[in-house]
Image 1 (cartoon, rainbow over the protein chains, first blue to last red):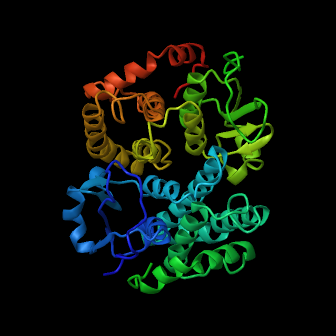
Image 2: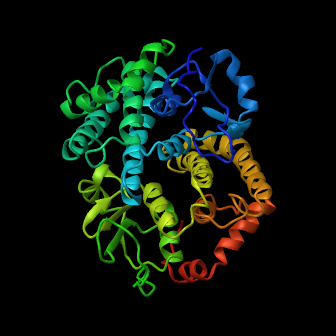
Length: 221
Length: 221
């Protein structure tokens, strides 16, 4: 089954003494769940990758904490807020840098990418066609170059990574976001930014990520 | 000077060996800077509380990393993303719970409150009067009760705090947000939610927070 991977022998600390049972619930999309899926893949952590349709959502929504997904059930306890959960697994997998300072630098990069993502989402889901056209112009001509230039510069000055020349969850989470946003916008927007393109390729070439990308369900974004 | 407080003898670990020099730059508002200011006040951490006017912003914006504030300079290095920085100080002050799991629970609560804050911000800064009126209706009749009921329930089931019956940065950061959002919306929206009202009062009654609230510049929100 998609998402059920690995040998499950990694001990992930939780409030449960034994290796917990994970179930991730989200749309049949990469989207907000994909950074977490990247971390779970990287750590060979077994989970049930439960996907629902847009038609099912209004009913599903009622049972979700704070009405949002992705939701991760850990031994039946439903957690939400994807970045908080992704950070938790990053800590278990020693992907938050060498100290609290570097952990903060990871958070800064992830939150910055998330700000950018929200601009893309605001355009993508805009229901009014006229407003959407205006948003598209601002997004493509202003927002995207603004963020991409600066993110590219961060990778350049951090020796090919987002934080201090080493692999952190910032690399994994941001590349997971780039990966779905490029499909959402139907443009490989990192192609003109050599440092971003390089870290994207580096992450997608990690054996566990490569294997996940190959076996994951094919979705529009 | 407002914001320069405490004896500065607490050692906060950073990349600098000596106690670093902090300068916080933001509008003359509580807003997004206030959770960080609450943490700094709680820790008796000295900093320069630099505030600028709306008129100065277009020019200031150009020199800010990713064009946003609050920015915290640490020995001259400009950091952004307020929640990432607030979490960093929370760690130094042992306010992230007892383990990684509780740290995640803090993050979940803070991110949830931040989602709610963004809905309020989306209404508050809506330039079109007609659209704003519609947003107000949704905000007051749907969004606010939705979030407030659930946040109130979290405090109830966590014995008077947001996480596991103990003081964490989730309490401080969320109350800092409630504090300015209530003034922004000109309604004490926690008054009808006894558990939220109680944690608000508890945090505002902490000696260091009480002292900060008394001496901070008076602002609309």
